[in-house]
Image (tube, rainbow, N blue to C red; front, top):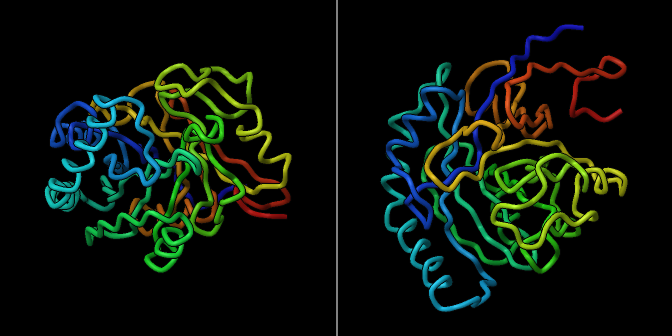
Length: 269
């Protein structure tokens, strides 16, 4: 069976020195344009229930949030400058940490440049619904209370996909390759892996993205999102994400087509 969808590869979750990571903002856009189809720079922006681990680390995080807010107009302008539908698509977004509910990166369907740091998760989901945003949970396999994904709070209409692979490791199942080692909050928790969620009846698409903290989007083996879309535009990419026409790759860009009873991946039978 054939369709008129194409497979596009990009990074929906990446960091640089605008926030509390490293690497040039400008250079990250250049790197992404040189080897990806789409790119979302997602600065660390806020943490409603931040834990005071120790003074120096907490200060680093909070200072990074101030930097992200101050330089957001620059981020918006670069996204507009680099956006070239049909060749390379930029997506605006930012990250919300959550000790109890897990981390999300929020992606916007346009380049207007909203910067709404809504603390309550349900209110943020309502905002995303109204604005047409997507919220992607990432590193889900951390434990609850340690920035792991709380699936009981899932709003599938704004969070249709789950980031299951990044430089953190792979959350497909608890014995998958790439165990949680980098940035770890204690290793993979079986009840927060994709296979467990599917067995519990959750209907989730999957993506990967680097979560790289060195300003290098699309780093090899750190993860890429694959989206099936009819054209390389922001609207078409968001349509693919909403309808779960997505998959995750950890290294090589594998072209994948999957059908069951003439239905493409992401559909319900």
